Length: 456
Image 1 (cartoon, one colour):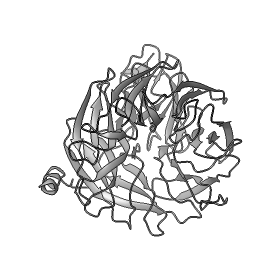
Image 2 (image 1 turned 90 degrees about the vertical axis):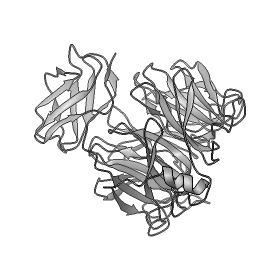
Image 3 (image 1 turned 60 degrees about the vertical axis):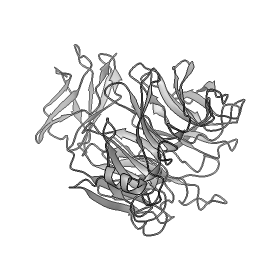
């Protein structure tokens, strides 16, 4: 009956196209656990935790940082080495200066992992080496906040060993904001999400009232508030990115527990009110999948998209869509040949398509990069997503060449510049602008931002 119920509630969506863009082969990387990020040049950037040209025992290479075009041409821009940091499990974050900032799980001066900066040209700089006192094992990546600094977490380390939250300036000065004690959470395992209130929201794999994981809030100054402790009935071991919705709530996933035992999708308000929206099946080949790990993204159609590491019609994991009310639609079941066990979440590129990685499977067994199109149109997104009047902003998009107008919630900018690849616009927040949607008028039509730009 459980299998029939899952099959009935997970309906395949028509008019979708799934494409394998790259099968990793070890030399160009292997085992990607990281989500991709769009750069100002219109390409996508990501990491692999193994492979590449530098040897790291017992791993098959120290890992790579790569660039891939929307059509699937992959270039390794850097192979990591032990001293500079290796085994990056997280992706990279595009900063307002056009460079990418990321973390590596191991290596560095003390062997406890690093924060690094890399330019699109491949110029690599180790920004900080962790030393266990300020954290060990930065498992997830960074987010650049509205104050220009980067915020992130370490899975282990700190005085208790349960992990930390830290802040790092673009110049590399790192400050530990919080050390977890287990009662307030243990082993943070998500990229932090900055809410509309300016605070950061994240999750921990363990700890809390039942030692099954938490959702927490932390201010830029380091004041942490536990918002929810999971108790298995509402899921356990939350993992992956918390997606901020237009109503100010966050949507996320747990790896296990819930009504069917194989993980959940939940919504939580900034004040800590949690509602379970969906429970994944526990059967191996349940159509909707099981054990989500990558979290969710909020797409331009108003729905959320994510992946499961297991389940689906082939037992290799799935890609799914879920509405804000909790109706789930299965979009793709992995076969192994097109990838298996997708660990990271998806990214929606400004061409409207979704891109992601699978750590194993593919032609060589080293994982894949894939694209999924469900017919959503192009859009634009601002970098950063908030700023003061007169502050610099880049607007990422696709085919922006020939743009004739840029407005912030209806207020036009006086001047703007489109880059050579037609993939980014440089401008400033115009006088009189208010919080709202960014619009760009191009020869092919008007493109709108999915996320409102907040004028501070």
